[in-house]
Amino acid sequence: MARAIWTGVITFGLVSVPVGLFTATQDHTVHFHQLQRGTSDRIRNRRVNERTGKEVGPDDIVKGYEVSEGEYVVVEPEELDEIAPGRSRTLDITDFVDLDRIEPAYFGRTYYLAPRGKEYLKVYELLRTALAQSGKVGVATFVMGNRQYLTALRAEERVLLLQTLHWADEVRDPVEELPELPSDRVGRGKELDMALRLVDALSGDWEPARYRDTYQEKVRELVRAKAEGEEVAVAEEAPAATNVVDLMEVLRGSLEQADDTGGKRSSTSRRKAAAPSRRARPKPSEREELRELSKAELYQRAGEQNIAGRSKMSHRQLVDALGGGAGGSGRGTGGRRKKKTTAA
Image 1: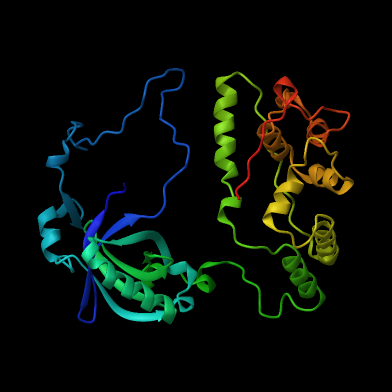
Image 2 (image 1 turned 90 degrees about the vertical axis):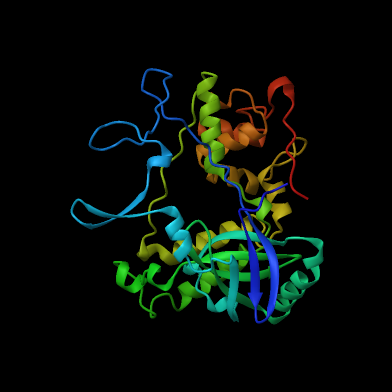
């Protein structure tokens, strides 16, 4: 059971709802320790006095604001608590606005809000339903960890979400910050028509479980391969930028490729095309799809299907192995492929 990282009360008008705040996401990044090269000795970060070089304990560390060179105003933690707005631990909704009126750049982290007891379920659901049916989000502020947050309170199925928002002075103006931006006259005519057709051909339903962090998978595979003394598959270079002169030709080729692979297909059919059955030889279009993949992508698929000797195969051999061609049996250890499961 998750633990609340903050507790307080949502207020809107004269209505109040005691709630707890819970993190909505978790990190799956591969984390490394720092070691001294050539040893297994861990490197530790320590807080030391800059002048004496001696380590300082956490209880002896205070916050200081530099008012002039070498001169600081020291602020104690309890002093920050005393002056912080929202000392009563309230999440105060001041406005209700349309969600699509908030620019994406303003959104930060996402949290879940839950009622702090069965007796508050009714008023919690009342607020959630009101937000859902109105299509509005509640703009609110609250204080957590000596910091005030601007937030958007929004309704999802059965739960209230809290998304932190950046303050207006934290969001940069792209026109002022970015060196080059297109004019509104660029991207019209036949090129736009072709691009819209390509978008339509590649469109499908939003199924988040279909997407994976392939970079983290490759990091884990790198660690595993090095630990077992195997060869590490190297990723191919990034594709070159599209030449504006050849834009129409590139768009046309992309559209033909999308049509060859089934155009507007469901995610399930895409997965089946990407991993053909071991009993049926792939169709020519499917073999072409394999040839278009990089060696690193082919190596990843070979790993998923438990194809033996994949680390020593060339790009062509990986294509043959995955496609059941002459260059490889497409089978893994023991003559069987590893069964690959897909989300329902």
